[in-house]
Length: 178
Image (cartoon, rainbow, N blue to C red; front, side, top):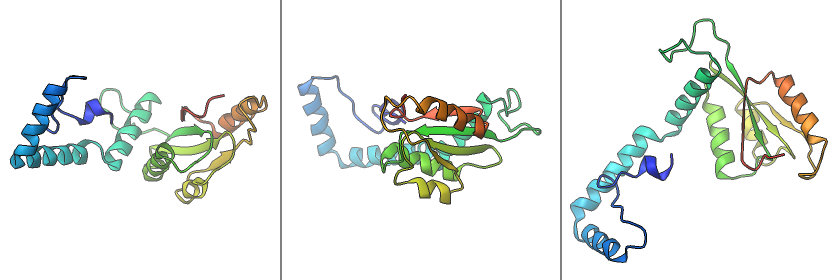
């Protein structure tokens, strides 16, 4: 989640307007002076993260959203339709560098229920450092061999890879632009 989803003014953080040094100093003084306030804000922050922002929560919400978008849920109930096929998801990345987005994507793909989502990874350049981690998690990896952003062979290769995967949904990392 982003800051707006995690930070709740007065509950787990004390927000002040930008560039208001006096209010910032006053809030910091109050928090420093009150051990009970520090403890309660810290506990509230930890509880919010445990309740809303764990890997398991993110995976389940992602699976549900993918199933809904692909029409694999019973209308209005959010449950998986009895006659559904798993959503075939293709994730497109430039490469699997060891970074936050790549690591989180690998962890999410590894944890997905294969009865709901069948993920696969398409790397525009090369497989990268995390490809074996994806494979160990049962996620097929395809590298297209792009040599630069000007490599005109990439688009037809990508189209073939996506058609071959019979992907219903495609997600991409911001660096995976053509």
